[in-house]
Amino acid sequence: MPEPAMEQRGGSPPHEALERFAREALAEDLGEGDLTTDLLVPDGARARATMVARAAGVACGITLARAVFLSLDPSLEITTHAGDGEAVPAGAPLLAIEGSARSILKAERVALNFVGRLSGIATLTRRYVDAVEGTSAAILDTRKTTPGIRALEKWAVRCGGGRNHRFGLYDGFMLKDNHRAALTAAGVELARAVHEARVRLPDGVVVTIEVDSLDQIAEALEAGADSILLDNMTPRQLAAAVDRIGGRALAEASGGIALATVRAVAESGVDLISVGALTHSAPALDVALDFVMDHAAAVAAAGTRQGS
Image (tube, rainbow, N blue to C red; front, side, top):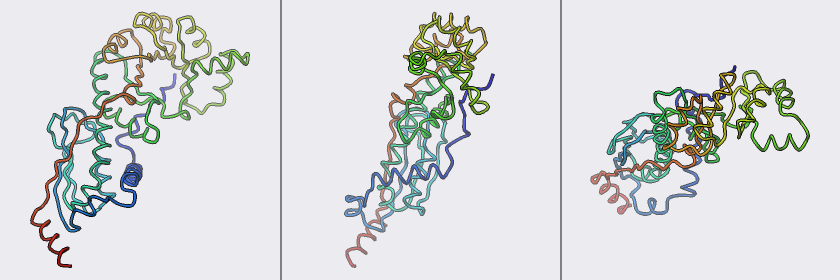
């Protein structure tokens, strides 16, 4: 049986991808310039700033925040205090920046937004992973992500100790209820459709078939499913489904799973638990930037500007 399309994809996204995300986000925020900073802050003023976690959690996006600041101004000096995937207490420094006050102020919000959002996903994922500790179940994400930044949000899930499900429609075969309805309307049997599709699938692609009742499991097994997605079932139903599957396919629980219920779901014996809430409902981690101007440099810069 092939492994599910849940690529761990190493650590952070490639450097060039992080730079692209940074540039696009900065362009969205800055437009043609920062009206406030450009008018009020002297051009030569220098400052120091520290990104701090105001709440305990799992850090993610630190590498990306660094890319944001350096994309705007390569002369900034960056010191990293926490790594992506590292648990941090409230008050922990994450990143320190020194250099142009204008540059720090212009990049501040974009960097904070990335770190807050991604750390929130990583933190929530870690809670789910901790909740099923000691069972054989793995916590997975879904495609319920923010358009345009799926790679970042799936990275955050990995930082939290979860695993990635298929990245998109192109790297996994998942026959869901609407596909089943389309086949029924066309008069095509499920097993025949899946067998014909498998012939044309690339090697190693996992075939997942969704079922919403115990009676559909036999049909999914006959169709040759590598993984059976058990949709919106109670822990008792899941246990019965695992028994019927009997190890002939992976058993994946999905639908309506919360922190309060995930342990019971895991104890049903399923192999996988996919949780859309990891990416669509994670609250951002509270992070802030403590900013300190270099007053001597600011005064000198202001004097230079006035005398020019």
